[in-house]
Amino acid sequence: MSQLATARTKSLAEMASAFTKLEELTGSIGLEVSLWDWEGELAHPCTKRFAFTEMLEEAGGQIEQACRNLATKVVKSKSAAIDHAPTGHCLISTPIYHRHCLVGAAVALFGTKEMLDQEQFACLCNRLQLDQTVTEIQAKEAIRYNADQGEDLLKVLTWTLEHLEADLAAQRELNALQANANSTYEELSLLYRVIGSVRLTEQPEDFLKLVCDDLLEVMNLSAAAAVVYARLPAIEDQLVVVSGEPGLSVDQLKALIASEVAPDFLEDDRPVVKNHFDTGEGKIQNLISVPLVNDEGIMGILVGLNKMQGEFDTVDTKLVSAVGSQAEGFLTNKRLFADLEELLMGVLHALTATIDAKDPYTSGHSQRVALISRRLAEECGFAAERVEQIYLAGLLHDIGKIGVAEAILRKAGKLTEEEYQDMQRHPVLGANILGGIRQMDQIVGWILSHHERPDGKGYPRGLKKDQIPIEGRIICLADCFDAMSSDRTYHKALPLDLAIEEILRHSGTQFDSDLVETLLSIDLEEFVREMHQPAKTVFPFRLSYEHR
View: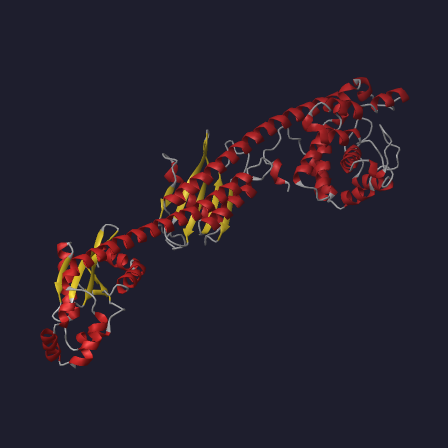
């Protein structure tokens, strides 16, 4: 079947509801209407026929053949026409257009009062071998018009069809608008959810998983994936996030994107649609992809796989592009934030290294306290953001030593009472130094309290038990454990078993007993070996989201 024939068949099917309405309207004024296709074949027979018409047709009146002949003539001439059946019925016909395409003709027939002429009527009944009395009764129920009213009734038929087609077109447009509105609502809902997730505290994996999950639902896909490339020099791993069932492993999917998708964006960063795609295994039938771009180039690629119904279209392209733009903004801001974070932490590491340099026997101490504090916080089940704040507090816990004389810090022997009081000032000095930095507000209290003790014998305020923030108690234990397990000029590092014995001896007095239990649950031999590795001087990019 040719494309034109297929389109006409589809159009006639779409007009089924309009034809039903046409039958109702024309039947109410005594017309019997049928629908014929562009080849003169009956598409929809009349379902509201008078008994008189059926009686004549069954007797061989050839009314249907007359209707076919007229419909064929109208389709060929593309203009309305009037004719008569052998029975004397008046036939009126008009061409039918659907979406500006000629699809067939409507034929209406009606019996005329002229048919009731006694001589003419008797001849008709004799020819068709019908009982004249019975036939006349049926005729009088069906016949309403004179033959010369055909022109007027043809105008009525044409006008009715035109208005029904207009109504049908309006309904199609309304349905399309409704579908577009539904689609637009889903798209806006998706973008709203995506935009709502663009927070610097959101982890890239979590954000991209949300994007892929929503694309999966809104676009009716079997799978969606995002690949984010490592920056050069590589200070982070390539990130791959997958939602749904692509039918491929992560490695296979990465290879597919690298070989079949990424090359499309070497010269052009516009979205790419492949509606007829075959991996060789038939697992990916179609895909849509968009690059994630920033000033440095392509950061990654967002891919939708296997649309469940139909093919990817311009609406899908616009949606993926809009979501890709949001993902680009998120990743760009995240990387800028990470760069600033790395710069800040680099400065803080340099600062704490400077403090440790004033006190040579504590070289690397601040970094190790930060690591121990972070590990304890993780073991306590704290959220990632809180863990990092504790790490930062551990790193800066001795910043107040800037204000302590080097002679006191470097003194190998026991401090005098006056020197010890001067040393005890460093938590307060540290809190004062950081107190003017709004972003440090939360950790200031932890640094201030890292020499407080549960038994109330600590300093600077003599707090007891739960009066001491849990973060301060963590840093206190971390500080002392590193002092015991590290070499100092006035003593060598205690063997691990003796350090543990010392920690246990002061549990509940100098140290929080629950935290002691948490510390001893760690493989301390391995942990001590790790934390005495050369200290990092630059804050690792992925620290923000590798400890979750």
